[in-house]
Image (cartoon, rainbow, N blue to C red):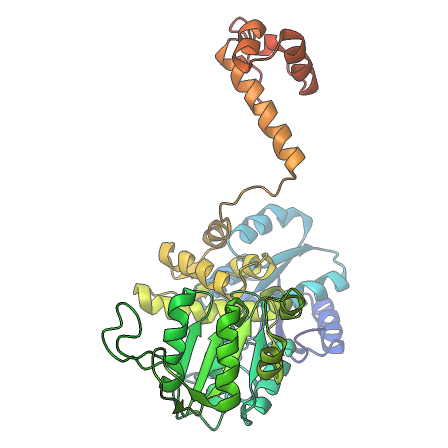
Length: 464
């Protein structure tokens, strides 16, 4: 179970239930605080903030719903799970719409409660002591990992490998989908390396036309080509003593691959149009989202260059493979964007975090940043709501239909529009469609359409 050792606060005035819940949660490795009233819970939260609150709705004095409102006001990202009798279900459902993480009706299944707590722990962050700041999230909080936000074991293992390879001068090939954070990882490797005080230079090989890419990488001499009014220093020379990061190396043209290989072998560059070579001392990191093995088979990528670049290979997981990192990443981005937009943003409501954690992320971390930015730009409250997150997640896109299904949909819509236009007159509709009446009737039958449905003297039937 995730979150083992996490602090859970249980609130119930029934001592038997309180004792039973405490025993079961402790048996699963949680640290449990048990109290009998909402007032006691507020005090305990102020002294020792838990990761999750499990509270009965029916309590003496303040009830569980009032406790939830107090928690939402003071600690808006703290997940609250309500336990309710059947008569209180409408109130609990209403509370869920306002941000309660979830509710269970009594008598409840302990396993379901444990699963819900487990889910809540994935969305809640450990509380830091007052005044303590996180420079980087990860093992040890080392400064070299600044900007690399994670708590997942998958990323922890990757960063351990990155730290190890950073100490050497070996070329590293970083694999991963677009938006997964390949440049962020490359910068971290540079900061952890002996070259950290040298420059870090990055270029996207797929974003620059072939004619310009050679000049960008190796520089050019005055008069080397039209428009070369002066000498230009290339990125290899700019990165001398440091690290050069070639993003989307799989998009590099074959002719330039030959020249890059020569630089790596000889450790010298010759600017375009120059007869002189210049020595360079550069550590090369490269990245790609392409399948380079397939590219080599197709003759699109040189095998000898591949083995020069892929001395060590690191693979960044997709965001969907590290979902437990999503709340941390979202909170980190929200903090940055709060400054950008000048808004007092405190974070996300628990149901908003759940929407983020369960969404599909084809665009990976880059897409998550865009969703958080849109939510921050539109929010009028310190706590970002689930409605804003869901709005930002709804990116207009064409339905993923097969060709046959798309053709069927178009054909039916076309027939409907014709019949509306002609007031259900088949002869006129068939003439406009340039089809004979027999064929037109066959099409109407295929799509279960009746001309009378569209005549003004008949009751209009909505499209299916």
